[in-house]
Length: 305
Ligand SMILES: Cc1cc2nc3c(=O)[nH]c(=O)nc-3n(C[C@H](O)[C@H](O)[C@H](O)COP(=O)(O)OP(=O)(O)OC[C@H]3O[C@@H](n4cnc5c(N)ncnc54)[C@H](O)[C@@H]3O)c2cc1C
Image (cartoon, helix red, strand yellow):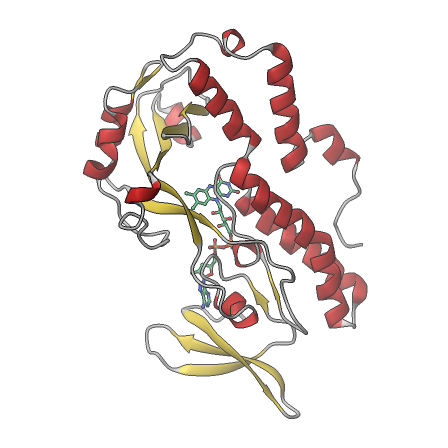
């Protein structure tokens, strides 16, 4: 059964009644108990389930980068279906890409952009702000860092200024955990392993967790706890390694090396990096994130059956 509009509060175990999840009805504030054999905390960065399992961990860890994000309809730029990455996380970086086929078919482009600005340690204390995925950002905060930026035929300040609703977040993660769950409870997705959004991996890792968890539960049934522990055994080390790798992503190293060597821009990346540097950097990125198509296709399925 799906209980919408409710928030996890705590677990309760009553003699003979098994494990129950106490949920709070968010609009009314009333609490209700729901039977749950194997609660899975998939409640994101500020996971209440994680806080229960790992008390005293504290807030997410901020790396000094503020991110602003927006979506706006624009004319097609950069030749169409292109992910443009400009600048680097050493100072200011911009990522822009189109996200709508419908807009493309109308001869337009719905552009998703993320602007990331690193702040010096001395100015950070007042800058972090809460990690709330729905917090509105202000154009006047982000625009100064992109004054005069042009990426090919894209006028960056004009794009930012035309965006109606801008969001803002600090770039945060949490330290890898030595274990996710305990007894009949476990964690999944950002609740288990929030990572910096620099490699487009967080969402897909949550999907992988769900897939592996379903298989482990199916193959260890009826021993519920064995299924949860098998899931953690497969997923925890790999997900933790990604959290750590995202603190020093090879993709970021490419951008920083290029920014240092060609601060005034360049026409071809081959003029800035040697072929072997390019090959090494791209191989390191593929190794970290496991995106090699041939290797993926050669692996067995995580399906059940
Ligand atoms: C700026 C940015 C860009 C990103 N870009 C990408 C990308 O390109 N590709 C990618 O794969 N990932 C990306 N990510 C990461 C991705 O968004 C997350 O990894 C993913 O959303 C995690 O999914 P989740 O279901 O674990 O957590 P969430 O998506 O955070 O979902 C958690 C849910 O739990 C609910 N919840 C919270 N507290 C409670 C409670 N007490 N009780 C009940 N429910 C609760 C929340 O309301 C929410 O609905 C990005 C993240 C950010 C911040």
